[in-house]
Length: 197
Image (tube, rainbow, N blue to C red; front, top):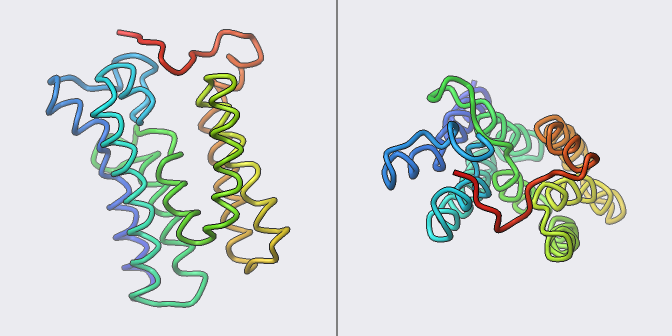
């Protein structure tokens, strides 16, 4: 019963969309109707600028961290923290408070994976940052992070639940970025720093 409660709380926590809330507070808009239409840090950067984007990024990471720690503190073990982390990402992507239309979950994914498996996430994250710096495609860096973290978790012989979670999270990321993948292949994906009204 406590396991179910922890997972439900994690989903509700993940459903708090800071991009939507901050955009309404700062500019009185629904950010999902502007730019790429995504409720996340990158679109916040395009529409609102660096300060709000950094706030969204850090708060979305914090959701993932908090969800995993909720599972650790309430239940312990390996599986419940994993499921709590996944629930937070699902909440971010499909938030109950905002008509199940949320973001792509990468910042929350960073929080979840870094809390579960810090070094694999760090190594994958450094490579992802390098890709973003070279190409200015945030979506490509996000996909690299999601794809390489399971590889590093496997190479470092970390617990099976963490590998399973990272593979599910990777699937989430590719599903949520499917339009970006098409744009990357067509050569018309938005680059970091481009502003769209």
